[in-house]
Image (cartoon, rainbow, N blue to C red; front, side):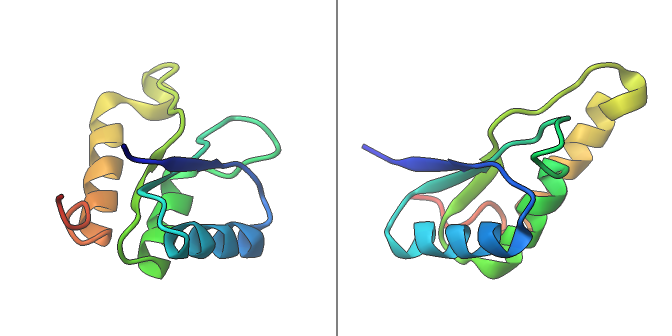
Amino acid sequence: MRFAVQIWGTDLDAVKVYARDAEAMGYDALRYGDGLWPWTHEGWTVLAALATLTRRIRLGPAVTYILDAAYRNPSLLAQLATSLDWLSANGRTRR
């Protein structure tokens, strides 16, 4: 069985501490909410930042929005996911 945690929030210092603590406690994955609300930042950017601060925990969006081609088209989403994969050492060590 694997366990993940989900984070939402705009206090980036707290988000960084939470991510490091989740990794230290042995969680397998961390999800950051990619929302359009005032209580969250753009999720893929935050996940990329967390990839540079953590080593093992797997990262991904809790939710990702593709509302229309003007907001986040499939090509952009693929590029965001590829960049996160690259920043997180090719998706972290596969188990």
